[in-house]
Amino acid sequence: MGVRGLVTAGLALCIVWSGVWSGTLVSAGRQRTTKDGVYTKAQADRVAAIYDKVCANCHDPAKVPADKKPAPPLTGDVFFDNWKDRTLGELMTTIRLTMPNDGSMVLTVEDASDLAALILQMNKFPEGKDALKNDDVGKKTVIVK
Amino acid sequence: MTTDPRIDTYIKKAPAYAQPILTHIRQVVHDACPDVQETLKWRSPTFVHHGILCGMAAFKHSALLGFWKSKVLVDRGFAEVGRLTSVADLPPDAELRRMIKAAMLLNEQGITLARPKRAKKPPVQR
Image 1 (spheres, rainbow over the protein chains, first blue to last red):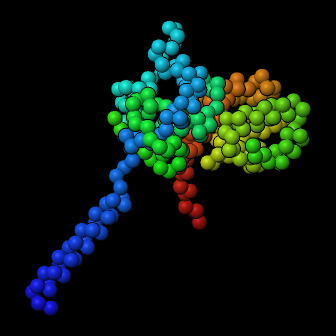
Image 2: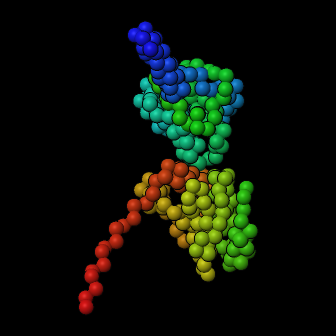
């Protein structure tokens, strides 16, 4: 093999190597976040009645009775102070196992996923094609600002 | 709702005063934790969800509802459930549901109770 052959082989190796490397990065993917359209509008809409009945009385400042201390708002800076960089899995678990705080109702896994979707919608995160689920993908999704 | 027939038998054989208490506890546990598993541990009805959640027992004059991680629950502001002689002695259902859900959360998060360290036995003197 002459010099030209060696150079050609080296170049080919570089091309193959860079292809493999970039392929690895693509397959590893970046972290899925709440900006990636991780819930559907239908999902947020179908849980609105539960939100109004169960959540708004404490979390919506406009609906909290005057004699009652409001719970942390579910939108804006306070929400992000509490939840930024945490996962939707944590949010869904917190909703399911600590809400409503008075124990008046038991929320199902699906209710908790839908309520998390509604919170994302209220915080103007983009809607997507697939509903948010309490599966590995949904649980690992990171809440970003 | 998955039930264990041995719990049915336990409740049936319990003293008359205790039967409605045990039945009520069982109902509320299943309500708060739909996928809970029932079993018998230490001959008493026990509810399992990612580990032991709580158990109940009936004695001659009083019944008992015990949370496996009650110490953590008390630290988190929940009141301990005392001796039960009627359903009225139980906390209100809403409070009971809160306790059960808090216990579920502890188990799902894998929070365990710190075991007290055993003192080393002194060497045997000969």
